[in-house]
Length: 359
Ligand SMILES: *[C@@H]1O[C@H](CO)[C@@H](O)[C@H](O)[C@H]1NC(C)=O
Ligand SMILES: *[C@@H]1O[C@H](CO)[C@@H](O)[C@H](O)[C@H]1NC(C)=O
Ligand SMILES: *[C@@H]1O[C@H](CO)[C@@H](O)[C@H](O)[C@H]1NC(C)=O
Ligand SMILES: *[C@@H]1O[C@H](CO)[C@@H](O)[C@H](O)[C@H]1NC(C)=O
Ligand SMILES: *[C@@H]1O[C@H](CO)[C@@H](O)[C@H](O)[C@H]1NC(C)=O
Ligand SMILES: *[C@@H]1O[C@H](CO)[C@@H](O)[C@H](O)[C@H]1NC(C)=O
Image (cartoon, rainbow, N blue to C red):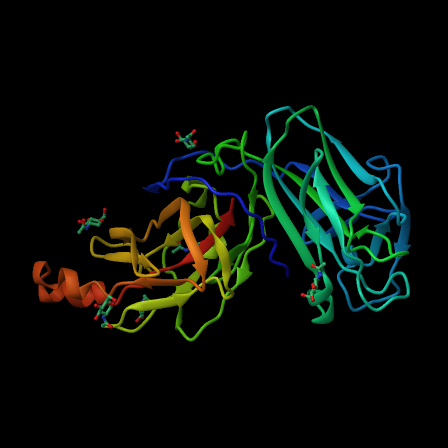
């Protein structure tokens, strides 16, 4: 796993709760198994060999059986000046999720992965530094959401001042996934790309756009949902499976979550949280609570039902370690509820998934 970081800031934020209704499309775009001579199938998705998308570099196969098939091959590019690109035909103005995946595997006989830049359409996206992940036996991936400036979209690698001679920039897989135009439409992609910091599933995941949702485990109890959501009705269409389970807390307590599980650079972030009542659907299966982020009200009196609800802030200022608190509603709502409903509502779950992308 990897946490790419990017810096840009914009001077306001907005909050919306709701479920606009688009319909789910099939997965479209380019899914590339870099450095391979053949197409492979993984988790029901076909990754094509990269021939025809790039004219530079060399193919290498890692002689290992303990890694995912897609990681066993990679393409590497010679050390030196200049960039090495993959090119894709796209519709100008279309929105894409680009994910690059890197697993070094000592392909060049070394012990430390090379450090280099990744570039989209001529704009430096980020430095690829997989050193820490590789040391911990992890794969690194980077994600960005952009709109295409032209009819061709290029994803390139290039040496930078940190690339040690003679090491070679390399790549294991590359995905350019066509996102529906309504996804992340609160962002002005003419000005910004959204880089994923973390997308967390407080349960399990199966995404219509192949976005990765990392599991998150903390000391809070997990509970299962007893009603299905129609995830195609949600902003940004989280996979329905991520609603199957969630974090909760015991009656009479605030639910406090330290998420994401690492410190963030000071910036404005896109934060989306998803909630659902865990019980079976009934007239009483709802719960009202207030969501705080670092003690500031993120959303007041949110009514979470079994259908689920999203709240998001498009440019929420965050810095360092973040704490999300769902206020135990009895403090605010008890006087207005009958005892019977009070007990019911306190048995509810706040299902929380989260997605977070900085500017
Ligand atoms: C790459 O990452 C390692 C491990 O986190 C860090 O020690 C090193 O300074 C980084 N190098 C660059 C050039 O960012
Ligand atoms: C974003 O997409 C939703 C769902 O299609 C739509 O209701 C909303 O108006 C769009 N917002 C913008 C700013 O385009
Ligand atoms: C929810 O969906 C799953 C899988 O589609 C199905 O097995 C389950 O019965 C559904 N649950 C409810 C409460 O409708
Ligand atoms: C929940 O958090 C609020 C605000 O921080 C605090 O006033 C309240 O005492 C907390 N409730 C419990 C049960 O800890
Ligand atoms: C929460 O939503 C449910 C279902 O729409 C509704 O029956 C209930 O009255 C709402 N609760 C509040 C306090 O608005
Ligand atoms: C819903 O979650 C609560 C905890 O918040 C738990 O006590 C309860 O048993 C769950 N309900 C169902 C139907 O699983």
